[in-house]
Structures are given as C-alpha cells and as structure tokens.
Amino acid sequence: MTGDDIVNLRHISKTFGGIKALDDVSLDVKRGEVHALVGENGAGKSTLIKVLAGVHYPDDGAEIIINGERTVVKNPLDAIRKGISVIYQDISLFPNLTVAENICIGNEAVWGRQLDWKKINELATAAIQRVGARLNPKTVLKDLNLASQQIVAIARAISFNAGLIVMDEPTSTLSAGEVENLYKIIDTLRRENIAVLFISHKFDEIYRVADRVTVFRDGKYIASRDIAAIDRRELIRLMVGREVEYLSLTARSLCKDKILKVENLTKKGNFRNVSFELKKGEILGITGLVGSGRTEIAKALFGLNRPDTGEIILEGRPVVIGCAADALHYGIAYVPENRQLEGLILADTVQQNITLPILDTIRNQFGCVDKEKGLAITQQYIEKMDVRPPDPGKRARFLSGGNQQKVVLAKWLATNPKILIADEPTSGVDIGAKIEIHKTLRELADSGIGVIVISSELPEILAVSDRILIMRRGRVAGVAAKKDATQESIMAKALGTAEQAAEFI
Ligand SMILES: Nc1ncnc2c1ncn2[C@@H]1O[C@H](COP(=O)(O)OP(=O)(O)OP(=O)(O)O)[C@@H](O)[C@H]1O
Image 1 (tube, helix red, strand yellow):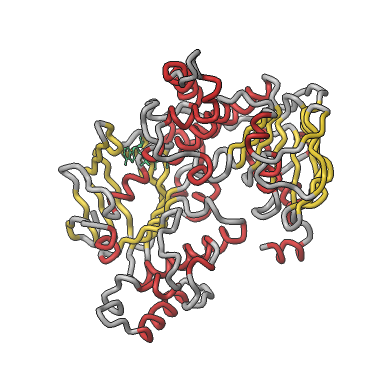
Image 2 (cartoon, protein in one colour):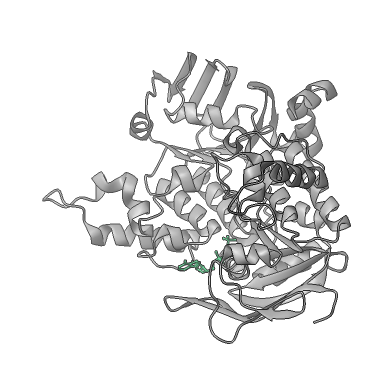
C-alpha cells in the first residue's frame, strides 16, 4: 500500500450458498489511473465491485482501505460518500427525475430538508461541464439515450468528489461514436486525478484506455501488470490459464441449396429494399453501425417486427411470419441482443429457461412435462456450452453475465432450428467462451443449419462468417465473400462517405 493508492482491497472472499465467488482476493488502485479488471465469465469481477460498492458484504477477514483508511462500506450511498461511485450497465438512476436531480440526490451539500434548487442546478451544471458534456440539467432522464444517461451517472460521481469511478462493461450498449466520446471522458477523468476501474472483455478497448490491468481467474487474483508491459497473448494466457488461438477458418465449399431468400424487405423507418440469400450450412455475418437496421431485419425474420412489403422465402416457399410462434414453427430461432430483457426469465432456473421453448416436445404420455427428459437435455447443453457453475437448478439471475448468454444460446439450440439468428452472440462473453461459441456456430452450420450472426465486432464477423452483409442506414451497403473482406473494407462500406458517417454518428 502506498500514499499513491486510492483503494486497497485485501483478503476479500465472498461465498454464495457454498460457492466461493471470490477467494482471498487483493487489488490496489492508484490515484488517477485507468485500471482494467479482466477475467473469464464468472471469475468474480462484478462480485468484487459489488463488495467495494457496499452491495455485498465480504466474508470475515476482508480489509477495505479507502484513501489509506481502513473502513467498512455499509451500503451503496455510503460508498458514494466515501468517494467510490459505480456505473452499472443498466445505469441505475431515476428515470422520472431530471438530470440535475439525478446528479444531486443524496448529496448532503445541496440535498437537505429544504431543497435549494439554485444550488442543485449550479452543482449539476458544474459537474456536467467537468465531464465536457453538453446536457440540459432540466431534462428528464428518461428522455435521454443510454449514452447520455451514462454521462449523467459520471457527472453524479464527480459531484460527489469521487476518487474512483467503477464502470461495469461501459461500452457494451454504445455505438461507435458514443464509445469514442466515453474514452475522451475517461481521459478527462485521468487528467483530473480520478481513478477509473473498468471491467471489459474487449481487448482493443483495454489496450486503448487502460494504464494497468488486473486478471482474476476462478474467484482468485492472478496478476496485475502495466498495460505497456503485457501483450495480448500473455494477457489471454493469464485469464484462461492456457494458450488460446482466435479461430481462423478458411473458406469452405458450401452446399448450393438455399434455405432462405429475402426479397426487397422494407419497413418504414427501419430498413429498405433488403435482399439476400442464406444457404444450408452457411454462416452469413451481418454487420453495420448501431442503428443500421441489422437487428430490425433479424426481428422481422423472427416475427417481431413485421415488414411493410417484400418477401421471405423459406426453402422455396413464400411465408408470412406474423409472430414468434410462426417463426418457431418454420424452424427459425433468434438469440436476441438484450439477453436480460428478451432472452431469459431471470427468476427461473437454468433448466426452466433452456426447456421453455421445447416444453411441447418433452411431455410424457399423460401430457405432463417430463422433468427427467428436460434435465438430460439441460445437462447436455450445460456441457456443450460450458455453463459455469454447471447447475441446472441455479436461477438465471445469479449467473454471471457471460454465463447467462450461454444459457440463452443453449435455449434456442435445444429447439433444433433450421435457421439460427444470433444477435451479438458473444456480447459480455470472455475470450475462451467466445471461441467456444464460434466453434459451436460452425458446428451448427456444418450440420446443415443456416446461421445468421449479427455483430458489431469486426474480428468476430471475419472469424465466423462465410459471407458478410454490410448494412448502412437501413439498406444493404455491400456483400463480401470472406476471402475478399478486411476490417478496413467493411468499415468503409458501413460508414459510407465521410459526410454520411458524420451525419450518422
Ligand atoms: N447473488 C448471487 N447468488 C449466487 N451466486 C452468485 C451471485 N452473484 C454472483 N454469483 C456467482 O459468483 C460467481 C462470480 O460471478 P461474477 O458475476 O462476479 O462474475 P464476473 O467475473 O463478473 O463474470 P462476467 O464476466 O460473466 O460478468 C459466479 O459463479 C456467479 O454465478
């Protein structure tokens, strides 16, 4: 411990119902540094942050030292008052309050029995200016997009004189322009000597913003390094405990049978004249900036976003997909982008979630759900997707983010689809599991399924796809065979001309 440190965590353990999420972990964060916390899904990163934020109490023996003083963090407001602010992915602010109210609520300097609105507005305006943002303090929070809400959360942290701002996968829901803006804000915080501890699975991001990195594995502290002193290969080895290679799949010869043809699909405000084909056994990657229409097209194919005009032709037959049940009937499965809202029932167990779409196929002769059959299928997919912990009875809410994603994928694979559409299938998933998911998608394609993968991560698109369809502003901007595509050529098509790109961002 040195006077340069804002936080020292020592001997932090946390047990949930017999499972050690954290096992005697330590972490030092220096003043003004940007510190990345990395590790596989379930390594304990979020749990550590929640201990620091006063959401969870650590097991006995833990020491939390803030500003050189040993302390107990009683609850989240106590953490904020001690200079530790956490910005969660779902932001966790009050949607119906204004920006200024959200920044100042609970701040003893201005939030007393009698509210001093002038002071509240002044404090909020000053905090917004310090992050270099332009936001009206009187705007109601819910009228802002997620990126702006995140900025409000950062301004709130600043107004509480945060010495450390913790960000949990802060860029997972941001568009390219918003991500750059957040990086600039992080640079500003560093200049103001405010430390940032952030969790990320994205290597480009870690190397772009971090000064130091700490690795956790299986609930244990593994190592901390200056980012300049560790290359990607070594960082992955520390995370996973072994060497991992990104898949580099060579172009394959494909079967000629078309499974899906989309002709001139149009929906006002969403997409226009979109046409493409998908062959049996093919992986078609769809990419483009956030808002380019990628997800809207996927939802149209799954009956969640009915097109105005155009045709969907399945195995040579035009079909109308009016709802998700129609899509399932035709053998189409859709793994949504937002797993917490659309993909899972968080209060249900892993088994209940995985077997939900196949209940009809696992009934016994009396029409009752055959739980043993359901368990066998669940166990098969837990093993296939390496869900950790491998417990069919665990409630989805208590799984780490990446493991929730694996369960969503498993749930749709269990329907034995003819076409699988996976929207950002590895968002929040660690590097080892990511490569496993890529392999699974390949195996599915090899077994004759047509796979559509939507992703904004270009290395992922290039690693898994046979062909790549690039969307821009609701239209198809180009289609490239894998052998002809590079990150640069895809980006150029996704952005269009410089003027179009500026307008978009
Ligand atoms: N409230 C809880 N009840 C029971 N188990 C929990 C709870 N919270 C976390 N866990 C378990 O603790 C372990 C660590 O989870 P944690 O969310 O900290 O991982 P993580 O490193 O943040 O993973 P990810 O990268 O997937 O978000 C996991 O096995 C998880 O299932």
